[in-house]
Length: 254
Length: 368
Image 1 (cartoon, each protein chain N blue to C red):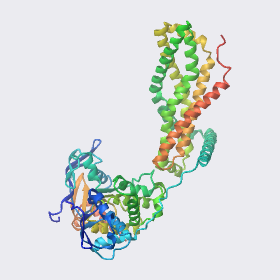
Image 2: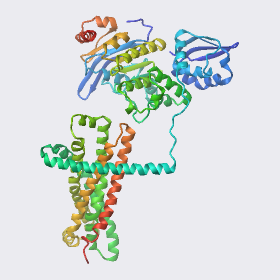
Image 3: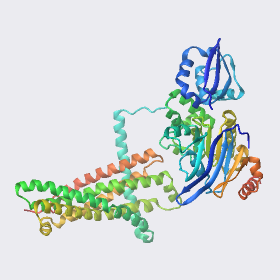
Image 4: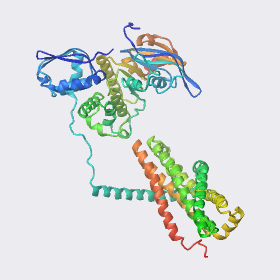
């Protein structure tokens, strides 16, 4: 663990989540500091996406607290909560683009919601974000239904980055991208992290993304974080899930 | 936490300090923008070395202030320079890309073409249905009984409460208002004729058709529409399952079968409401009412009412399925098509009702 000077960006204590009658998380603790890139791994159905939704406040915890940027998410009122949420960007697994708006307006949407920026500024920023995710300006006119799966991912990332978030939540960011794009995504995120001191929490199944990007790894199993530490520490551990992950890595190399 | 972005001008030199990020900029934006726009700052030399963080939103702001050129003298850290370079390299597109609005003639043209397109689609669907029925006659084992049953339950059984309630209230209201008039001219007994003919022949079928179009027609369009959006329709085709037999036909058959029954049910309850109201208002006993009903309303009216139900049911499902399949994979198109489906179905129902009225003008009206 790094020094105490770094304040926690996300702090979860004793968190329990219940969906229907089933507990997804029980007594879960997570502490993510500024500048960390945390890879959240775990078997399918272990509640990784639910954990991200919990950070966004889309689900009310059954017990425990979620603190973002040092403030209690549940205790904050509507205005304070939306101010907090403006400081983070979320890349949903399926993209969650607004299907009625073209790509350009999708990315411009959060910027326009600020109500302070003029159209010229917004246009430059949107074009910048499009260039950032290696899309052409012409792609801005396409509707989400006309995009390929990988393009949806990239547009969604551009939208998540639109507000220059301090905290980026990524749900399967590289799934559906070809290896080249996947690699350039890793580079892009690393670069942004260096420049802006981004904090990233990403759910991923891709060993390459994890190895290339994550500074820390959190393993979610048995309804809580069974292991959290720097990437090297955790990968050296002997949790059965990680063993599977490493084996997967080996087959990939063969 | 965050330090506010500051701009100082000292002896021909612009010094920026603090955190130049979107979040930090926002509260200071009006002041900063006026100061940045104030005078020819672009010509001065800039010192950005004290900037803690510079994000692309702030970089765009600076780049605009510099009139999209690098200032003559600029001292800046490596990471900030990279951000600025990215902004400088980004393509600038001036065109807004907004489509021009079509003129009135063009718009009418589009409307006509759209109507023709829809008419063609409806005729195609009708033809496809006949082909499917022919196919199912030859392969009766492939009849989608389960889907038909589910649709009968959803569009029929579940619609019983609302059609019953509305029918009852309409019956009571109609009877009450007619009674007020009839009593003043002493023609009390004609309440049976008025209620019998109007409810069984006209109000029952149209009322149920409007309710069902709003209730089941919209649901059918939305369901097929979402199946389009989520590519479920394509998944069916990919498995070699005919979407017209599995998705469209059950809805058409179920609603056609179930509508006459709903009409019968709603008309019956409306008559009961009318009877009760007549009993209270005009002292016409229930037995007397029923006895007179048989005399005053020839059976032809019931046949006309039920046939209307049959046709209306088919029209609603037909229009609903047609517009459902036209949904494009976005939410706007889904809502537009659902609205159009309900509006078109109700309009068509009333049109066909008028045709019915003229075609059956010599049937079922008792000669006094």
